[in-house]
Image (cartoon, rainbow, N blue to C red; front, side):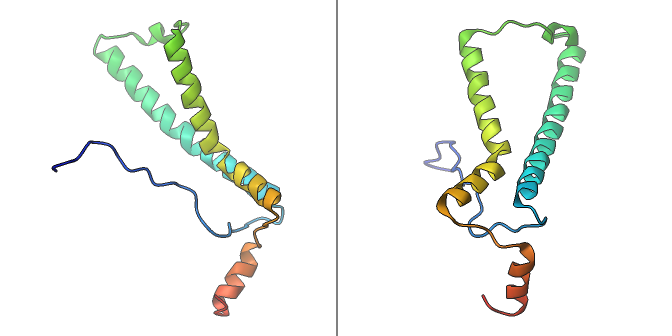
Length: 123
């Protein structure tokens, strides 16, 4: 493809409009969202780490025991801190959205009300 710089266009992964509520307490909805995000993140990470450890060990590149107690350079430490901040932003996205709604006075309606409006054709 001519003119392709190899860079990807990033599309924000934040939904617009009202967030549906599944539980009576909005705080529980937020907590469930955080837990589900963590489950997804941890699952992917576990698979990737296991694959990398196995490949490195089987290839004779690095035994699995060499990973324990490794010292990090200042650059590696900074990179890990940036990765951690991005990770926490993804995991806590639901809590941040909730806080923004409270700060602006916008409160999402319960899912039942939204569905009732859709069924009644009020949109």
